[in-house]
Image (tube, rainbow, N blue to C red; front, side, top):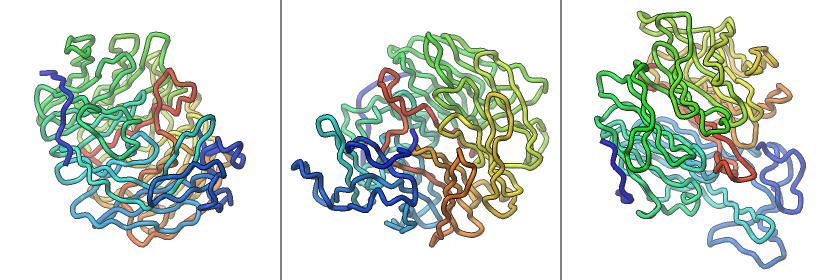
Length: 452
């Protein structure tokens, strides 16, 4: 049953030019724009205790490893913090440009990366502080998907089917109060996902631990707005460019994706009887969704070389064979909607998502293969709100910074631990409400831990 209450247990690209009138965000990695730490602005504005003012923010990478979380300055390569934590850890952007959600144990723990943007009249001030766990945890047995959409952040508990929704902006102060949260629930616990829509409705999956076939859109009062039961094995979601009538969201199934558009669900026409795209990646200004493309129902571990480019307006797909396999952490979208795929041959393939044409093939890591278990380390691709791509190299214990537009590796940094998962935080919100002039985007990655 769908329920709502306001309580919960709580335990762009980087500016290409230098700082302009104190209103730009972050400098490209390797620039000198953030060297004036502690210089102040001269207008009497100061940050909180423990914060140092800088002229601009360098993106920070948050990486999980076996034993904790480490935070890296992507301009200098300096390891800023190592926080020891037990258990298998996952990490996702929280949506506010400052925090990430560390998933482990029994909930989502809020981690402050230390990048602070403070508005002051007609301009911003920028501060840095030490990364730290805030002490705030949203209880969620078997924490699953984190979705950022239209200025809201949704957290899904696989263990209970509970859904927690909070305005992404409200996370910025590191304190999530009861009245800042909406809480919903699905009928039965399952590995699911929820997407807050700009209309105020909520898109969510329904299912059990044994089967998931249903996607619904429910109004704030719990009324059924739309439903499809034709999505076996539903997994993964991504938002595309909205239409004049509202949001467009795709979800992966085992017989071709479904797309919620114009208030109804539409089925993507695929040639195969079995076609699974459990990992989907969208962009706020693109009508095309990037997804993996699996077609063998009997494979114990399918290693596809084709990707799918799903057109959300025509409910059709174009496939591109890259000639080398990839895994679920290989895919991302660029700042201009490019499709990014890291393949076994070590190349980061950058494609035009509309045509499928390959724009760049960048040698980034040594040839690799997917590990036997999805929890084991392997390369990860992420794109920050700064527009640069970041690739972890688990075998070499490195982090690579990629200029997507130029098709070049900008920097490579040594890591003290073998990286598992990655989030990039820049100070810019990862998403914004659609009615805001500066729409930072709807990008959110569907991670597939039902299989690897």
